[in-house]
Image 1 (cartoon, one colour):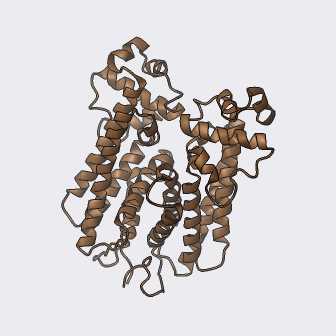
Image 2: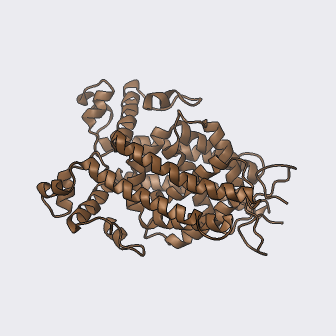
Image 3: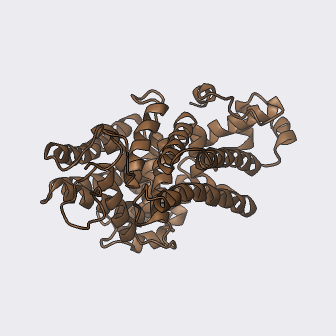
Length: 218
Length: 218
């Protein structure tokens, strides 16, 4: 599944990882962790998948945990970038929230193999790396909470529990990585559009456009 | 985390598994799979956690996959029972959908260790067992789709995409198992109540009670 994933999306995944050997090892690690789990994967497995020797792996990564950390860090940086870009964008809170959900869903659908590793292997990180990732997750949470809070303050949204609704919105998007199937009937963009509409309903968005589906009915 | 989970909830988890040795091995397998992943766990690890010998394990389970299948089967049977009971219950579609979400969320919160194994290790099942579990998952999906479809037919709900919304509702509930923390600030019942309200919004439920939070505003 990794091979298919690497060609999906508009940009080159892992393009920030250089040199090429380090990138190939990272891609191999994502595939191995997704298939067998972090604890069942050895650095020898990863090197073998990348067509390299274990000694060549150690030039780039000192430990298996360093590989997981690198994957997790890049994944969380990307998630934060997507959500902060949406939060800081132009438009009403409803437009920014819909944009955040569409982009976040698209990433979890197109990069579902990576996203599963990022989401399910957090406990395998060392304490320092884990603390760093938890801090990034707090910031992604804050970006969505801010859009929802601004929508409430502007009278656009009706949300009795902003932290709880923020948690639910993020959770709904993240779980796309679990069930999304590239051979399934819905494209990443279609899931993103569906979910943006559902999330606008969750926040009780007033939709001023006549006949729009997302807002409450009269 | 398994030990805490085994005392949560109103009923004895794994009470259907007899004799006692078989139940202890199952509980040990859930904990080991959740901690290290299915592929990194050996039958020797499981026997050791249960305070038994590998030979004693083989009296009850021929393979590690048989243990995973038993866990997955019991978990999926329970999920189906919860959702069909709600679907067949009395009340309006909104009441039955809220009941389904509350019960399904409570199970995923209280039994989050088991639920993670059940949800994340599907690919490790053998082909026949996997087909059996996929069939059960189609029935849990159908139970929720039926409630939503009945709500639409009765004019209670406004849902442009019933299969997509069903998928989103189940996904939202299932992902509780990933993030729920027994030491966190919300109880399983509180998450269930929050999510029932959010799901009624997702389906555009008309709420006839004055001042109710779940329905669209006038």
